[in-house]
Image (cartoon, rainbow, N blue to C red; front, side, top):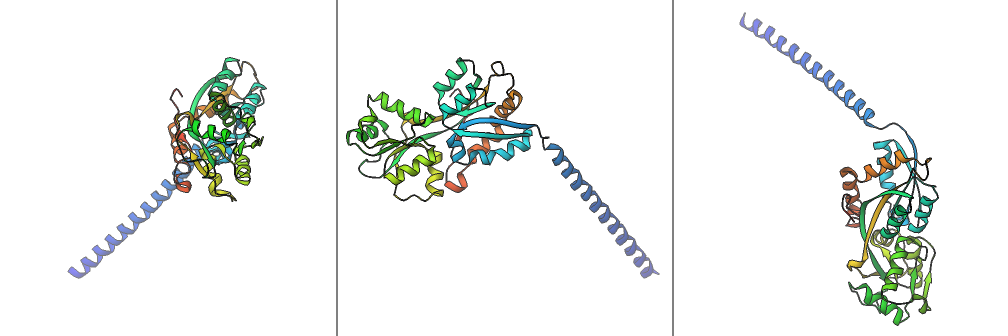
Length: 298
């Protein structure tokens, strides 16, 4: 009799366990289904295109390709851009050809706003400029004045962007501060091209050039350089390279996508995206290509 009761009890326990397990599986399926549906709901609906003018360094480093799908998922805007020199990027903004600009020449950016073409400037990130070139005869230093002075005095080969970009503006400003005329160097040439192409030309000519660090890190790792260019000047406080973002004025150009521009500015300055910017490049290059600093007065 006891054996019979025990058997009945065991059957009941097993039946309850199976039923409970089945219920848990059903609950888990429902939870998974709900989570998937929530994620689908979180993805923003398509809103159309946002046109941006920016510098070649944001494209050459791969940063924009890295951020584009995240921006689309978070906001619904499809970001498209023209990567040119800062001077040309600001001209595109002045002509109302784009909705927002992301550039790196603060004085020119402030002039852009003062002339009524931009709404407000927001700092986004920075890296720094470095001089790359042959390790001889210029000795490594953290003094940009020493390097530029030796290049002119010794008439060493130098490749300039020569395209009114932020990098070109910085280079010309350094020559001017030293009262030096680069045209006095017969080996000074202008590429008239972006940073990546200018580095390639400097490599071919075994020449020196000023570049942003981010583009140099990517170019030196990903491209096949013929000579042994290396950083010969870095760390000078005059070589800080700050990037700012500005919405093109809807008062000047009512047809611009001001909603998308404001969404982009809020998005790229958010903690989430600032963190992504600060992480970009660390795995592949051993250091970040940009340092985020939204919210500062840089």
